[in-house]
Image 1 (cartoon, one colour):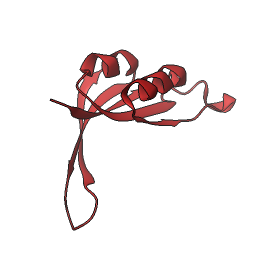
Image 2 (cartoon, rainbow, N blue to C red):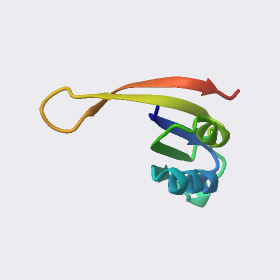
Image 3 (cartoon, rainbow, N blue to C red):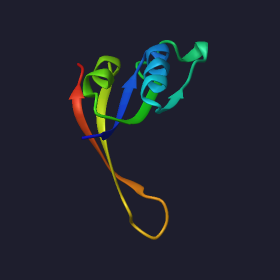
Image 4 (spheres, one colour):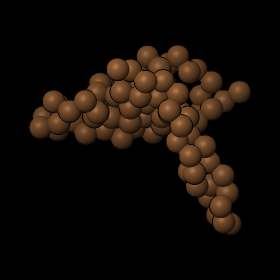
Length: 86
């Protein structure tokens, strides 16, 4: 079963590799001034490989739930934490 997942991480390079591997979307801030922040990248994608996302998600791993609210594209209505890294 394929799930839509989101991985939050401080490692923008690992996030970029994951996005390429799963054909996902990468949101990253690579500015030098953000290097000290714990959260620099977010990858979203549809995959059945929870471990691939979990390996990159050093900040958090989330399950995304979409549904049709009005005629048009599905809207994100839920973002559920699945793993937490202290």
